[in-house]
Image 1 (cartoon, rainbow, N blue to C red):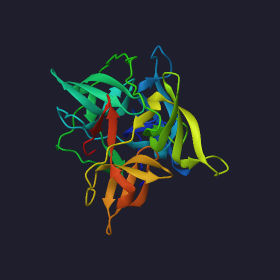
Image 2 (cartoon, one colour):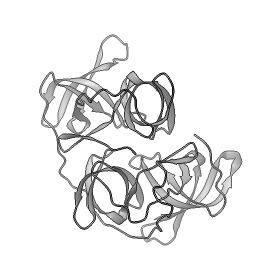
Image 3 (cartoon, helix red, strand yellow):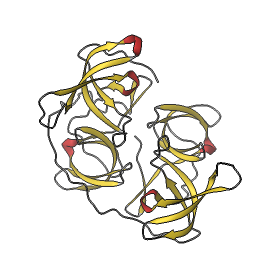
Image 4 (spheres, rainbow, N blue to C red):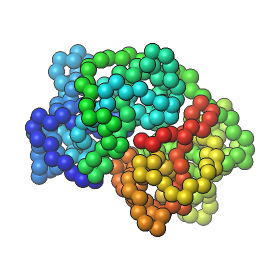
Length: 299
């Protein structure tokens, strides 16, 4: 990824690798840079040093976790299945619109937590990725909306939809382990363990001695049906969201560049990496939401 120099006073956004905060971005101002260590000293605009909110939090952050403030359209409405950033808990979190209501309200699904929350239009923005020094997709209008400071208190819903799987069903299983977030691994249901757990056998993951397929218990919230086959496409387009078969699992990414001979550069948000992959190693990305498959729009 292309490194950007930020001068004192630059308005930026900061990401975090801490558990529970991955995938979120927080607005901050650069106070100074430490070029030799590739770090910036920043002051957050919404994070405070204590619960009283006596003063803004300041800290050193690695340059790889810093990006410019994304552009934002004026008074933009959103469509079903459109990818957005939602302002929640003092930061911007990536989600997908799964329902549109009256009075400019939307229901947003968050893949990481598998939860749904309702937001006002003013607390949403079109999701963008900072790739090679430019925003994908680019700004739709020439004017950028002025950000207003608003607080929206929302309670997470306790109820989550879980599916019932029979023995022998082919499924995909996700993981919360470090380095595996966002990936789905194909497996078969071996048996049911209680109400919300299953014994699964992976198709591509092996035991430590590589002699047989790995079996383990998986929580129902980390299991989804095997995605339905989508119509065969001759080629993928730039900015299209895909799943890439890599390291024995399917990882969600974005087509950053279309190459010749059915090859593509795919950008992965979680790791901020780019890989060159072939057409046969990609599939159209879909999300399992409320018991049905949803095809996300282009990001």
